[in-house]
Length: 240
Image (spheres, rainbow, N blue to C red):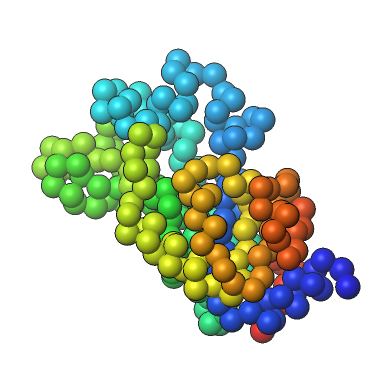
């Protein structure tokens, strides 16, 4: 039995699958991985990217923050790839509880997944820091310089910046989902981003599956580890 056949067998035997996803799922849609060799963290700017996308920098220099944010963190025209679509299909057919993701691109929701825990927020939503009014991504892209609300407040992307805590409600949802899963599929992440990566420790189900191009810290505990493109792997799977 090869890896794909074994993965199909695991999926067929599972009824409450949870997908835990990272940047490697979205790179196949054309979104760069921040930590890759040519990713944002290895590019040269007036300020280090880690500093620019921090809470204190956003407060002190929103103009520079938004210049970088529009230029490097918003990728126009991207669409869900076969991995996103297959995960959504599993949920639609009642085989999956949902997705827990470290990604901020909103592609799981765009693919049709409904129960999505976005641990680091999403670029698809933005809100006024003064009155709380929400704005879409298109809304802020249509505004010049620093986007401002009709009340005059600065609009902030609904993403978790450095120095900011993760949303507690989202954390509890993610842990609850993972703890109820009978199959956890960790894919597109090397599990190096904390605290998000620590939540997989709450899994007590039957099957742990890793689908990633590189090795992870959980490989030794996995029932199956496939080192390949997640889109390539998932496109060979049937939801049944």
